[in-house]
Amino acid sequence: MTNPTDHRSRPLILAEKVFSSGRRRGWALLAAIPLFGVAAAFGIAPGTETRPLELRTVIESIQIPMSQAIDDGQHFVREERVARGDTVSAVLSRLDIRDRSAIEFIRNDRSMRPLHQLAPGRAVRAKTDTDGDLHWLEYATGQGTVLRLARTDGDRFVASERPLELERRIEMKSGEIRSSLFAATDAANLPDTIATQMAEMFSSDIDFHRDLRRGDTFTVVYESFYHHGERVRVGRVVAAEFLNGRRVFQGVWFETEPGQGGYYTPGGLSLRRAFLRSPLEFSRISSGFSNARFHPVLQEIRAHRGIDYAAPIGTPIKAVANGTVDFVGRQGGYGNVVILSHANSVTTVYGHMNSFASSVRKGARVNQGDVIGTVGMTGLATGPHLHFEFRISGVHMDPLKVALPEALPITNALRPAFEEMTAQYSEKLRILRGSNLARLE
Ligand SMILES: [Zn+2]
Image (cartoon, rainbow, N blue to C red; front, top):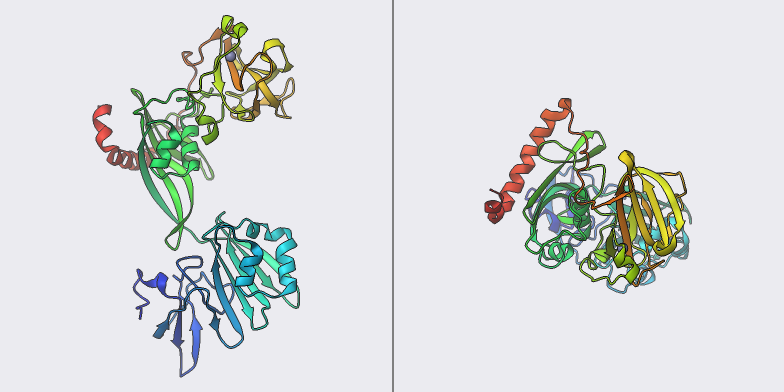
């Protein structure tokens, strides 16, 4: 049926009969058999599923319909797909696991928790014997790992989790803002984690709650991890470009030392600056509120010297810069308020909060991006929102118009490596930008 050297057809091979030396017949696995792929039901040699196995001669191959067992006389290996509304008990029963001690272990042992978060479409595989006793069970958790339960001896079980062997790919998508960032990323079929990473990446330049304009465009280059042709998860945004009104922002990820890195402009300046453009964590939930009209009470209109961010109660509020807590508590019309003091006599104020983070105490240090509390409507507020003020030496300033110090550039030592990598991604962005090119030049 299938030539095992043909890579395209490999994932469809379920099992092959192999003649090795003499006339001994056996079962063997091929490296490319999808562990949790298209359809798989195969057996023998637990623990070797993802490792290549050398085959000398393949005489014939057979295809085993899903959910049917490979039968060596005593053992069965089955695979079941989780259906919508499925329960663990139902899946175990379809796998023909009748083993009380195994069922007990799966139900109650902490280590088996990932299995209880059944996601439709995911596969559960198990090897049992004719009595329905479990030998092993495997489940791809969706966190890039395989959860494996194996019987050691008698009624003893050992659970382990190991990483899926994943193939890293680089993918690119473009989009245009028509209503919101998430509407655009949905249309481009981008996962939310990519959208929020992109918002985070440009958070010193763009306030995604207030600055987005219809017609803004973006291009994003990101990692995806595949397992036998199926995307298991997405990884990091490695480069992105955002055209916000007439402003163009570009950033590339660069690892300055193993395991540590940040986003830089193609010129080598860090995108992370001393201050964030918005104190509000950007998420699908808070983004929908960006255009919601807030009607402040009279007192606030008269003395309004801040920016109001309408957002649902409980939305996390972040410290916009490193600093120390100057005040935390209740203060008149501000309600629950946090005041932070930063370098260069800058003070930031966060009002109407619902709750404070427990680490936020007078005199405590905070880092940029730390969650200091959540949005509420305490004090003089008619609806849930964050009242945010930015003061320099006590004078209220528009944070959007204040010139703030830039973060450090790439060091000279790292520059050659940086430029080589940037060139690569700039090229990708340029290709994808396509019709927007004219707007840039
Ligand atoms: Zn306000």
